[in-house]
Image 1 (cartoon, rainbow, N blue to C red):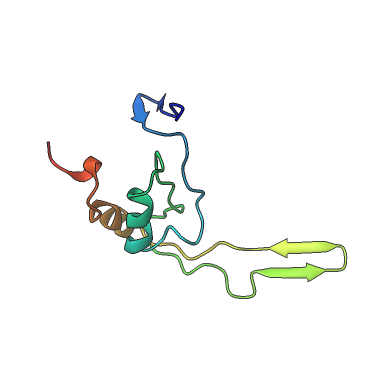
Image 2 (image 1 turned 120 degrees about the vertical axis):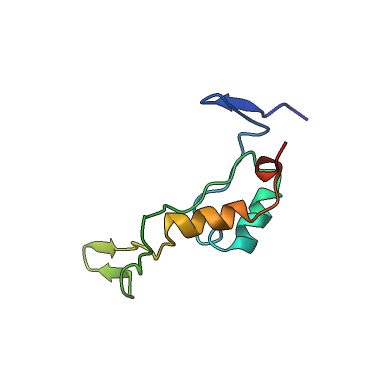
Length: 96
């Protein structure tokens, strides 16, 4: 198998393959699944200092000349996101 490792910003990644930020990287279980996959890194959703409800439904609308998307999805606070990430048992979170 070819070597897909890389060093980015001084951090060695075992693989350049990683998930795209999306709906399946929000809960502790989803993040744990990604963290234990063969991905070289885990991309999370954007974080805000305070939780955000997001825009009301519908967030997508077809119009005669095109469409409008106003996703601005709900977000956890940066503090809750960090707590979820630290709760996952990965080599990065273990004391040496």
